[in-house]
Image (cartoon, rainbow, N blue to C red; front, side, top):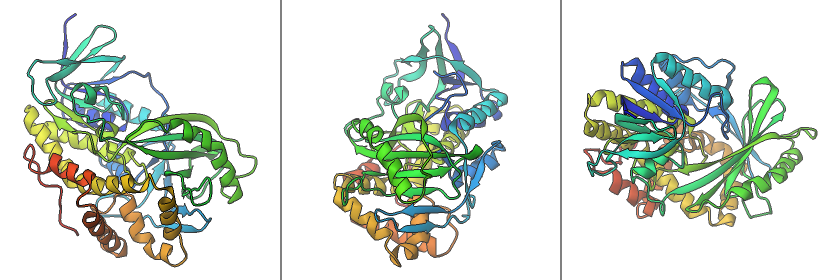
Length: 438
């Protein structure tokens, strides 16, 4: 069977892959958009698209019917104390998030990409196709499908999630360094006004190595779930599922959930966080979204990062004008400027805290303490949600800048920051991941 050739083969049709395909197709590139699933299909997720994602949707002119705006967020500490984190506009992002089920959201983005000219391909990727070039990341220049087709491209964009086949085939993952997490979510028939993050202790002073949530959704349904960090091991899935009923009971006790509300439609999925352990671009391969590890290590957000990385990868391809090397350099430079420092700091913080449940409990209690919690809320909101770059002047940006400086000093010798520096500074022409604080 003859190979099908494209300018770009995008593997994965989540927010990252569809955004990349949309931008490329609108620019006239011949794009294959590959996924094993038929759409619409569901995903385990909190269903919140952050302020950067909202801004991007506006810029690419893709409306999302049925989405609802979400502003401030409430954080509930282990003792039940609550702190309200403000959501304010930045210079480069919106003043709100939106809530929309992934069943709807992913279908809307995929449809926009196909309407722009991307060719949808449904099927399982069996293996990567190697051009025999023997270069780092990439001899890979295509994928073989389970029906015998082979799709080749000048560039391959891996958007196939945390357990990316493309990343593995291209040799871009060091499994010993990857930071894993697992999230399980359900839906409950209840109206929720403000999204709530719950720092939960299943037993006193033994905090969950992650958090729980209760987020608003359309049609009178709320999204409820637990996310746990498992560091280098993919062994925490059963714990999250097992603890969900107890977490639901906790939400009832603290008054966030009605007594008669019963969760349904359980979904779970792995997260790859903090970039560490994944080389996001080499040879002909660019990794975006979860495949690149672009999930916030502190709070698990990934949709906005996925969409922005998809657009950045597509832009690098277009500006590379047919040169894979220039596309790789451009994309890596964007990652270095936008994400490397933050992910290096927060990956190191996650690595230090998660094995110490008493320390996690102490941090949760401290951050939600009277006076201190509300006073830190503006900066907490900016830093925790990775919004410092592009934040408007004000107390939140000042506090977040101080937090970043403290983090860089505290974790300068950490394995995560050292890995980030070694893999971004002066490589492929990228700038050092050490932007000036502002």
